[in-house]
Image (cartoon, rainbow, N blue to C red; front, side, top):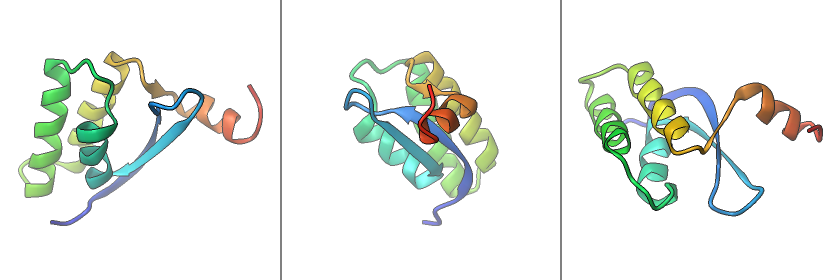
Length: 92
């Protein structure tokens, strides 16, 4: 399988105060399987399917990324880019 790279996404990780950066379909798939909060929704499943389909060439990497972001927003683990940049620079 090819590990398709995309514009990175920052998520809250299961450890309080920690962030995780996802920058490829492979990383997104792994996070969906093992890093996702306990509560799974239909959108979580849709993101898993989209990642699989992107690996298979059935949908674009960008489509899978957008669905992944939607699922992360729904799960309240998505960190907007401007906030993650401020935190990375030591600002709040």
